Image (tube, rainbow, N blue to C red; front, top):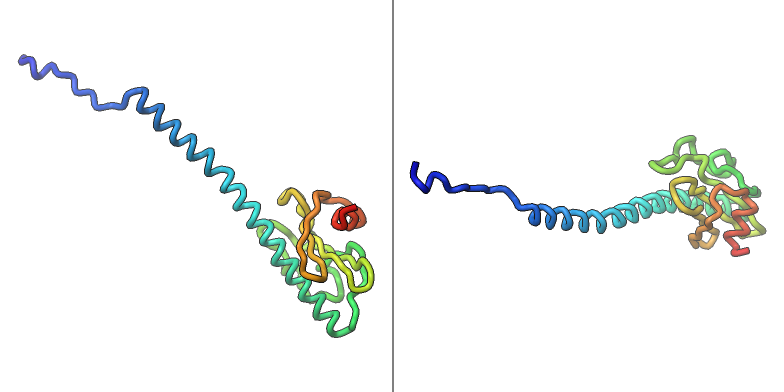
Length: 152
């Protein structure tokens, strides 16, 4: 055998090179996971906002026809006689029909609520002026949610 046939041609990666690749992948994953989680949270909130806007439109139509908003405190929107929502119409990927309630606070002041449950870290609200709000009192009674929304 000649000396050239004894040359060792290792073509693998060294331990140091593998460690550098693993660190780079870990950094990329550490950056991507919070971005993904934030995107999911925004998608959930957007679904709630769209449904709340649809409910607000129905309430504005009711007000235009009758000159007042319908009575109710913590009323399920899907069961309300003033809304023309059919069962399943407000159900989306994250929230069901039962997630949405309506409360007339006084006169022309109302609040529509989407119970965040396990999907959001807060309840999403919308009032008659089209102002979105949120409260961390997820799943509380309607009076707790109203008081929290008012900042009390």
